[in-house]
Image (tube, rainbow, N blue to C red; front, top):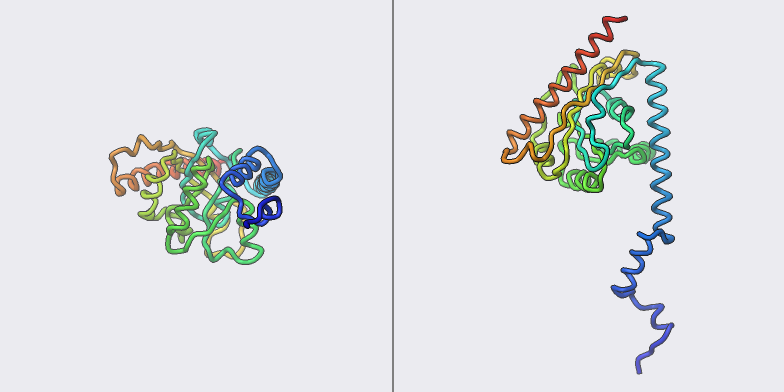
Length: 252
């Protein structure tokens, strides 16, 4: 005879109904839901501590100004694309934003301690030669969860402060994401900490958030046209930042 009752139930694999109840318990704030919620609050609080610390240090040591950041949608997935001049770029992009940023970082940076720190403030790894399948998947996941993801589509920091060509993969990602794309121009971070120097030095910084590109603006475009449009908007944002930086320097 087959055994029935509590003893057999305890060793059995949970059926579909049990799994649904467990999942609903987590969503409703059961023990698992509370743990997830608490961890999210801790990470958010840590992110805000890092953001506020960076803002205070930047205000004391550097003169920085940001314009246009109110054009970033307050809710929903957003892709920020920026020119890349320095290790400090991510911090300065995050300072004016009230919403936490997610960002991609080279997989070689995810070593013990440093990797944990990068993940704690929203970073996730990509391969140096390109964003790759896993990077695209994680970027799309975070965008579809309503997050803001920052990308540097040039692929690496500028060697001389100029803006290089964008990687072709940015068009594919933008078209698949179906979220607003906000170009951000940075000026001055190259002078603060270029890739050729070991330590940073003080210099004014300007950040300009340009006109957003919405999914409907890209309808009927091929990948080459999408890349060209993003490049145009990004160059415009960079020029605004450069003009603002020139005014700041002339006032010194």
